[in-house]
Image (cartoon, rainbow, N blue to C red; front, top):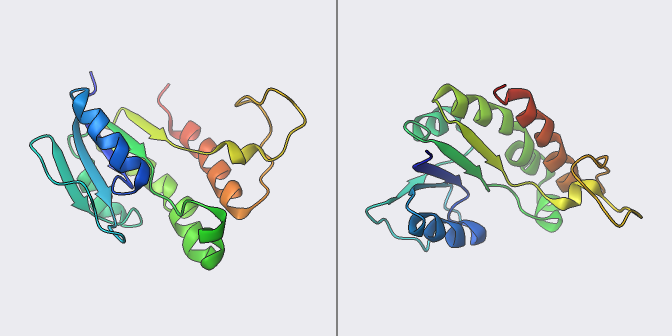
Length: 158
C-alpha cells in the first residue's frame, strides 16, 4: 500500500489543495518545491516541506528515499509563462523529466503520477478525444508536456 507521497510543485496552487487531501486520506506527504512564491503549507506531523529544484537530480533522488509514489505537478504552468523564457521552460518542463523518473525508480518509488494537460492533443473535430488521440501540440508548452508522456511509458515496470 502507498503510504508516503512526494508532491513536486506542492507549494503551488494545485499542490496546496492536494497535500491536505492526501493527508486527510491517511498519507504521509512530502512537498518538494523551489518555493519561488513561498509556501502556504506549514509542516505538520505527516507533512514535510522540502525546498528543492527538480533540475537538481541528486537532491530529488534523496527526497525520494522511502517514498512510495511521486505526484509530479512542478512545471512552468502556462503558455504565457513559457514565452517569458523558453529555454528555462524547456529545462523545467521537459529536460529534467526523464532524470527525475529514473531517480525515483532507483529509490524504489512504485508509482510516478505525471499531471499532463489535455492541451497536448491540440484542436480536434472529434467529440471524443482519448489518450490514443495523436498529440498535436499548438505551443511549446503543449509540446513539452506531450514529450514527457512517452518517457514515462518507457520507464514503466512491466
